Length: 314
Image 1 (cartoon, helix red, strand yellow):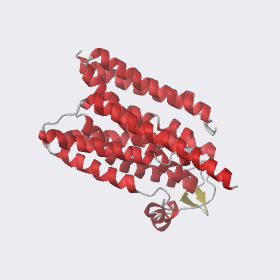
Image 2 (cartoon, helix red, strand yellow; image 1 turned 135 degrees about the vertical axis):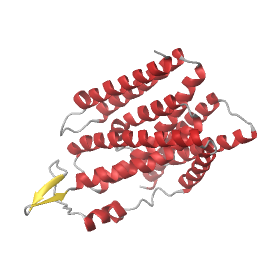
Image 3 (cartoon, helix red, strand yellow; image 1 turned 180 degrees about the horizontal axis):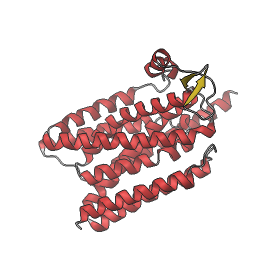
């Protein structure tokens, strides 16, 4: 058995075991997940991802392992932005806490399926048309600038969105409390509930974020194993990360700008390769960690400063 085949088998085995643990150990039906438990779960997912990094470091050259780690941190950063949208969806539609975990699990499964599909399409396109990588780079630079100047305060109401209006117009939908069901019977007819609506919205969100994250990972590496494993391991922690960030989502005012700078940097890095300027992968890894870490620290500092000013005025 060659090394690549063994690496894929280990990745698939780790993925299967992780899912079993999440379904039958971490996830308890109709029970709210505490921040403490969510933190433990997220630490578990990060440990699994780092263990695979250690395996790649030992089994292959260090370059491949560093590519994986850079791609993983890149995807982890984007998943944080994804979580903020999830928080908006759940809060806007007032989903009960005991139903949140189960719905998020379905959302994670959908995210993995969409990533696999888009990665497969991306690999086929890159292998056939290598120049498409520069289009990916342009997409990242554009997305980064757009995200940097986007006003977080101007979040659209979910109920004013196209998906909500489409369901209300073309499907039998009810606002009645679903009791954990996705479809309920009313007057002898089947009606979709808000839990179904939430899953549909999460699915669309997963697709939109996949369109950003796939170019980002291809900007770091075109190694099929690294692209698949880094993406999937980053997505696995989404559910636990949701329960951690939902209580502090409004505390990271400048995280969006940190993610935006990373996207612009990764996109620009691809264009520099045209003129044969190659940035070492370790430098990209440091840039990702510094940008995200600095934006989080500055957000914390800014919030503390704002709190002190409010106390003075009171």
